[in-house]
Image 1 (cartoon, rainbow, N blue to C red):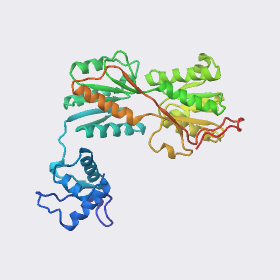
Image 2: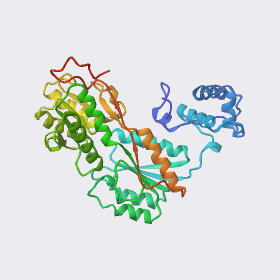
Image 3: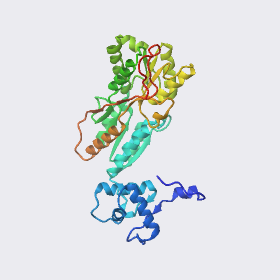
Image 4: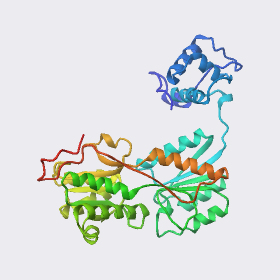
Length: 382
């Protein structure tokens, strides 16, 4: 991240240039006024003294590792170039394969994973799948050819119950460690990192039932994906327990499959509103935004006439209109766990080849409220 260029300077030139810091032994004196000013800036950003900044920049001993890292982070934030002696030597490359980045939850997860890898001295290599672009197998081959130390897959083919899982066995036979995020297959011997999709649906349904809703729909992606199947299981079980409906009624009348896009959510919500649903739980925040659009196209108010719950708690989703009630996916915990697990694999002390499941959290905002005709109940928004 670089500072914005001052008025009158060339933006392109500013973008290309990172300001050097004076360091002893690099033909610059720390005592000069401009450098002293920079030391003060860095010290303020890092929350340490100028003397500590000077010790870090000159490679002197006696500075705690966490303090040293804070000073280096301050350099990066303020747009200063790290002295050559402080540039980390990469332990190696680690591949990160994700779906398309249009869904903001994937960039958020990629950022957590990338930062965690960098802190451990590894260089993340992001490889993104796009419709009509490179496939997961092609991206895997490219990363292996470049000698990556390991690969983290996010929402890949391991989540698709119709996909051939032998690709992962072939990768293991090549000696490439890997971790699989969002999805599970008992046929693959590898560590898996997942949110508890069943619990996520229980949280959403319980919240809506407490607001008086009895016709609650579920909008989600194609059924062949493991997270979709788990969400359906959690949704059906909770609706059965709390509203007394049969599993067959829930699955045939209250579950609508579509695509994980805004347009997909709009289409699914339209179908559910046609079945008199007064609340819709969506399998992603993007789908939830589509559901809100569908409601408004019918002249309905969210949450007065229909309540909407998302899933993920993507960046900026708290600032939508209305602010979206959603089930927060534990992205920081999942991303850090994926990195720790992969590094254990790389280091020869692999974690158990099983699934590590992380609990989601309900975040109540302004898109849920009491069911129509039940307005004596408290509103769901903050």
